[in-house]
Image 1 (cartoon, rainbow, N blue to C red):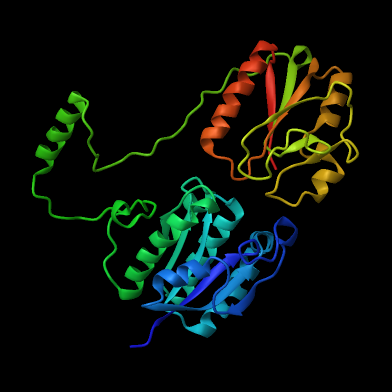
Image 2 (cartoon, one colour; image 1 turned 45 degrees about the vertical axis):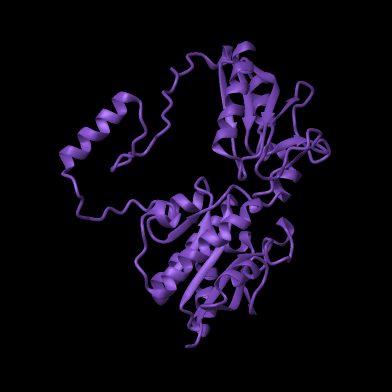
Length: 349
């Protein structure tokens, strides 16, 4: 019996073409296996073969979504594969969005089973988990050894037309789909058993998990801006020239605090961005585009605001975990409160 055919999608980084400087490469196709496809090949080789690898830069895909989808779908169509695999993208945001978007498009247009893998906090996971199977992976490519076997296991099920189990059984991100099944005990009995376990402090698993929304009540509006002390905080990665704290371009493990008391305008001579998730050219030419020191300094001089705080805080939002982001926010907020800041302007990319 002939092996099933698989087409694999990866970005420019995993194809070995380059990093952010090559993120604008257009879709191309190569015969056989490239990059992480080697690991996939090793786990599915008895039943399937990766016949082609499609490569596309993250920037090109996300800036030309419809064109990119059309080009790639035609590339896939030529091979008439039995399965399309994208990634894994881990916590790389633009890569995750690309993997989710192209996998959904292939499934919709060609009717081919599709699969990808991402970290649950990847924005692509939230966008596409209801449409496609997304195997849950670790935060970074360091988790590749665990991600590939999990993806391969689900891939083989899809190729063989086997019934897909629950998210816990097959390690994919819950899709919010409910299915009827026959349980041994009545619902009332199961509910009482769960309640008893909860009262005893024992572990139990709910049959209907609810989403956990992080809600923050807004403070009262500022009554008089002309007497207010305003601070700037950014996840856009603006830092003094040379990035003195070596903030990572992705998955930042720190933030920086920088003095702007002597600046009325940020220029490419004195500041830059450390962010690796967007084209840095325009931010580097004029860092005020991300951190508006020039405008706020004008407002300060005109008496519109009382004072611009002498320090700004900066980190990189690209791939940075929610847990770290919350930690940074708590530490920065504590300092801002101690400095009697009345309001904060938080800028992004």
